[in-house]
Length: 472
Image (cartoon, rainbow, N blue to C red; front, side, top):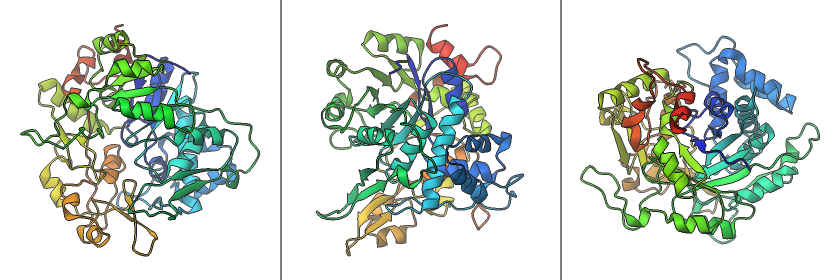
């Protein structure tokens, strides 16, 4: 397995896109694409006319040409959709997702990896959230078809993923147990996927990616090494200063005077015990400096994972106007990040950067009509008749309560699915003419990203970040 000193974080929806991952991998570090909602991302790129023809080029190399043709026919719009037309809806993932969605998911994950690997021999990985379970199986298979070298996964306990990677090498079917609130013994909670059902021709065995879970405690690392159903190849050890979703503090939740979760000594990972596991590990969260890398190496780590610095570089998928706004704030000392205990429908703390016009502003949040039409962060639950239902704490309140949700669990919840797509320039246009607003996430070191700007420049590249981290 490759052991780069720098792992580029797999951030958000489309922020860690193929352009960024390719730029990092070409420089010999681990470039990582975000696997979250890739099916919707690729569908919207196609509906926007596929600028540069990159999605269609990737689909031309997809090993199943009929499947690729169907994806193009469903979503590609020559010249792009009119500005006053909403994006075509993509089916929502569930235990019994339609074949149309499974095909899009496989092809989209292939395409992002294919493009990130194009034109160089550097390593490319993909990052998933274990909490987003329903797309896991087709996503992993698509990424393996594309040649992903590494699969990283956080926000859960992914003990069943290594075995899935092993089975997909030889096109064997796999299952994944869906977390279902209220499930009873005998309930069918399995997600199922058989590669054979999607093959258009025989393929040689696929390369098995390395599996690196993202953990925030020694206990979870130990559990994965002892109970995972296949090989674990290392860990990313992430602290609570990292951007995006954070692990909740251990013990009873306490809030600071600002309203942020309070982390204490129990949340500090014992690196001595991590070293005893004998697997390579990378440190994440507030490590994005040359000193941070040197210190990590001195503590026995193979290197560091860096997110925030790459999120605002030229190659990332974040919309240019948001990068400019945040960089201006960082340069003037006005950048702010709030660890919001309620923003995410998952219940995990979520870091929110203060950006004017985004859902970080209470007035923007209150003005938005609640809806859940993408469904990646939905919670599966058992209905009274034993069937599966799905609910989201950011959906319309009457609907959520009608599904057994609690009103206190819905308070303050933002629709991350729609806002994260807005972050990368693919906001949905609603029937009432309102366009979805962004919600920018960042690590606590946001105020320091100005250090990557070359003298006199207003932007910086992934190469600038890597050079600074390596002390070049």
